[in-house]
Figure 1 (cartoon, rainbow, N blue to C red):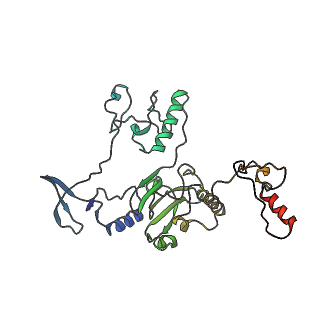
Figure 2: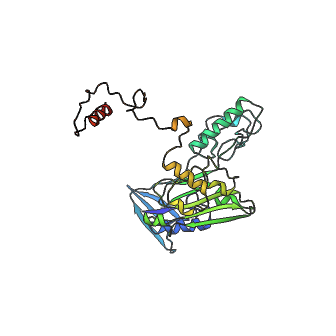
Figure 3: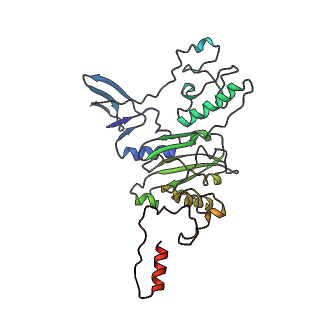
Length: 326
C-alpha cells in the first residue's frame, strides 16, 4: 500500500511540528508522500501509477485498487440560484454570513451541507436553529452562537484540531503548550506511546485559542476542550474543567492543580450525583420493627409462614428468632 497526497498537508493539521510528527509516524508504517507528483492510468483491471519517489527517482507500479479521496461539493447547481440575484462563490454557493446564515441582504438563509462550511452533524443542527430563528423573525436578524471548530481524522494515532488550529493564529500573539505521549505513563502501559499535543493560548490574557494533536487512542478523543462547552474565547484554565475531559491518557497533560476537574472525574466514575432532599438520604428503618411500613421491602405474601427453630436451650431466645424471621 502507498499513500499519495498533494500540498504537503497531513489530515486537518496545520502546525508544522504536528505535520512533521504525523508524517514521520505514519511514514514508519507505510509509504507516505504528502506532496506527490504522480500520474494515474488504467491497464486492464490494474491501476498504473507513475510517481516520483522520495529519493527523486521515477517509479512505475501496478495496483489492484485505487481509493481517491476527492472531497465533495454542495449539490446546489440545479436550484436556479443564478436567477436570485445573489452573489455566488466559485462552487456555486451563495455568499453568506456564517453567524446569521443570511445570504447577502436577501431573505434567503442557507444551512447544513448546502453552505459547504463544516459538514458535521452538530454544526448542521446549530445552523438549522440559527437560520430558522432568523427566518422567523426576519428582518430582525441576529448572530447566533457557533461552537468552536472541530476536525477529527480517524487514524492511529488519531489527528484532530479544535478551533481553527495553528492556521487561525496568524497575527495573534500566542504561546504553545506541548505534551508528548511517548514518555507518558498511561500511554506506555497501553503500549501506544506515540503522539503529540499542542495547545494554544493568547499571550497576556490566557484566552484559549485552539489545539491540535496527533495522539494515541482507540476512540475519537477530543482535544482538551469541548466545542459544545468551551468556546475559543474562554480562559485556558477554565477549559480543564469542561465535562468533556474523562480519565484516559489525557490525564498526563492536565495540570495537577485542577481540583475541580478531578472532583468532576470522581463523580463521573461513580455516576451522576443524586439530587435529593435530606429526608430521602436517611436510611429506612429495618423491616423487622413492628408496625413500620417499608416501601422498598419486597412483598412476602407468597412465602410460607416461618417455622420456629430451636437454636438453643433458651425458650426466650427461640421466640426472638421466630419473631425476627417473620
